[in-house]
Image 1: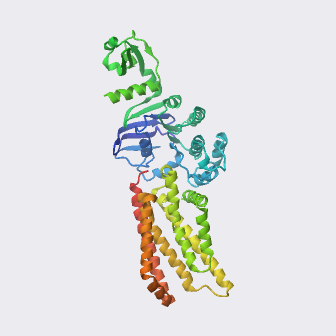
Image 2 (image 1 turned 90 degrees about the vertical axis):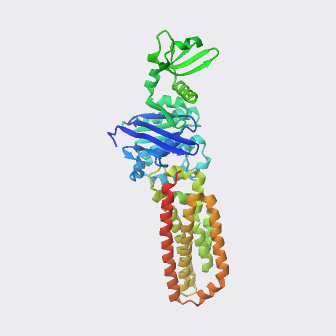
Image 3 (image 1 turned 60 degrees about the horizontal axis):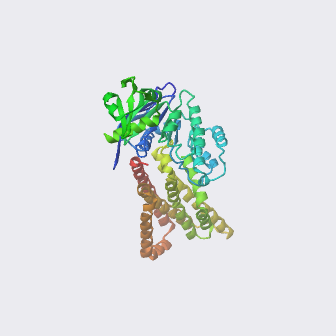
Length: 287
Length: 205
């Protein structure tokens, strides 16, 4: 798969359930990068990931993963090259790490026992303890060890760091960074913990109520937007095209603006990814 | 598929040791009645494995792995065939050994009866598995109880007539019955696998 421009290409993806629908989602993950899929609970992140792995079928749209259409029968074999970690580890509760290795060795042709044991050691996971007695952190570490031990080119991680303590999250994010040092390795990382995504991602896609509000390079997002704080009376002085979102209180206003459209007289403050997302989500809800 | 079977064997071995011990004990008891129980028990093991899959949400994870729908569903059929065949072979070896101790050969009717029970168990599994795939083990158990109830009812109504017919049956007639039953078992399984494949195609995890 080396030489591939995009690890994932999603076009006009739609999927409806009673009470929820994913509408016209399009984005791509350039090979060698990390894309963060962010969105509140129920925004459609897990649905998107299930569609990407052909665990559920789209109502409309197409998905290519590592150059293969996911509806192609050949895709099930291509999953050898995709390491997946879901929000829970989902291994049968009586299995030990040793048993999991035997199962995976007979599932993935590229299984690498040496890598698996290196991760077990790194994560301090016991070989013989049954999965039921693992803590949440240990369970997720085991799932990550499995995902990394069959020589994947793409990692798909659905809320893999959710519910973990900051130390463990840091350790795992370092491993993801290390993984993408290889040019052909890419990661799609879904999370609602924006600070985690900000640390490691090259691209950010923001899903809100089943719609993709943007998919942009992270650095460009941070350069493009700024926050200005002003009095309510000053609001009118701002070009309406420059205003992306605003929070107005009795004491003043906080406005998310496009940097280029704001006069130099306004003091522009630095912002975080979380600021952009909160403003955009709020603006969308008020629209 | 070996990975899927291994996962089921680990789970069943660790979760249902008593069940497995019962199957072995029934298989090695003198006489074929208990061996028949063992084979019928063994035919329920894939459903037990499915119940554990549902509990751990294994299906969600398996859908992310390099398995086709056919491999996922066939692993449960193969698990049943293996455990039933295991119980039948164990019973056959022990009964042959017990007959040899009495300086007798194993009666043809005896091993034929064993194969017949195996066919019935395979048919039961073939009826139950698509139902379990479709509605899940919890609701599927209801169908299972209806099926077992139906068999018991038919057995009660026709039991004495069937027993006397079997006693008077010649080896030739028995072998014809066996062949018919084998053909039915194969046909029901082929249909069952096709139905399960259809269910899996539209199934979403």
